[in-house]
Image (tube, rainbow, N blue to C red):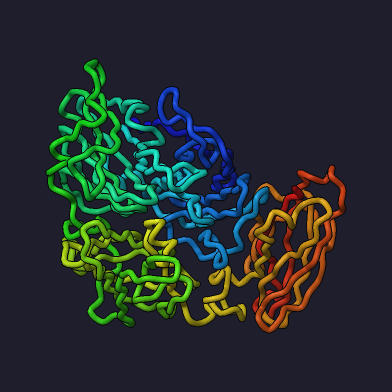
Length: 573
């Protein structure tokens, strides 16, 4: 099969022992959304959307994230059920990454499919352009449907990054309708579209004029093929579709708002080789966009076996989505509570949980794309029945009384920690529509409850640094924070080099620090399992740009007698 990916660069800087290493930098830049029109944006590696990161199932992915923004941020790899320490949620996974600092995201056991990455930092960061696609190819190519050409499609709404009240418009692959590069296909080819809604405010419908689409994947997970004329896609959702290119011409790949299907807000172009006619007008509305059959969740069924729907779940929850008035305006709520004053959904490792997510608001404009971190929903009442329910990480809940105004799901609680459950509409989330799923117990036996443990599935000390840039300037003082078993001793070293790859030494953990150059300090962990190791940076301007690595050893009653901590780089800026 010929597989091409346009127009995004593929980021793979090196492969060591099946580890793919990627450098990812968030920074301000200027991006061309159409010829002659540039906008300021926050971007990953200078592109909007950010570069496609592509790995193969079974490989380890290491992303060296550099924050060159003016405020703290993190990166969340949306949809992949990673361990909680790599989830990119400030205050839960780690502190946010300060301007000028770096964090290494390391992912093992990535699941095949189309996923994406975006910030989970300050309000408005996603609005400003920070989004990119992660593709994990299956280790066995036959696990994917056959196709000849593929194209990533990223839909987005765009606001001026320096004024959240100024709406510029809608973008497809970082460009307006006037800035599109045609997707060129040959007659008879099978075109795979990997479609992502990276918008902060808009749920879309997308359709390709003159062609039906066969849905093959939902949120990265393969489903039994479903032929549709148009595809509704909520914020955070992804769908892979196959298009049989059997209708030569130049066609509009058009998107509308889900609430206004009669108006095209942005469109791409699919052009058959040799066809020279003018592309469709920017505002052309294909018939299948305005009135074609939409995909419904009830049509989906998992392609591969999954955990079945159980008639006897261990816990049953209700999540009622609503709105109330707060002192500073409307609040968006889950079970009448608004973040951060929320009652977590309490679970235990091994539980099968059933949840009904329902919308108490009847407005047809009040869609809520609800996303769970670290897990998949198994959708109930679908074509998959109880044996092949489709897996999704984001479900769009419509207004009360409408189809999908209430959605039933089951969740296998197999990933200990504290996890977010929230609406992916950024304004709704900012106004409070965010909750928690908390695991009881101490899964890794390190004396830190799962709900507080920044590495709930790894029995190792966790080393973190501050989220404020002022802590790292020449002349600054600060502290390295440590989380480890109460009462145990921890010693931290710093070094000016690191090993080219982590060295695994089970059960002691992994070692990354090059030859240790200095002993930073030794502490005894508090009853809460925390400690601070102070540091002072000499007031020498030439130290700016110096990078050091931090890693230590903690004593333990666990097998082996001690554990290596996580590795944390630190820059003097």
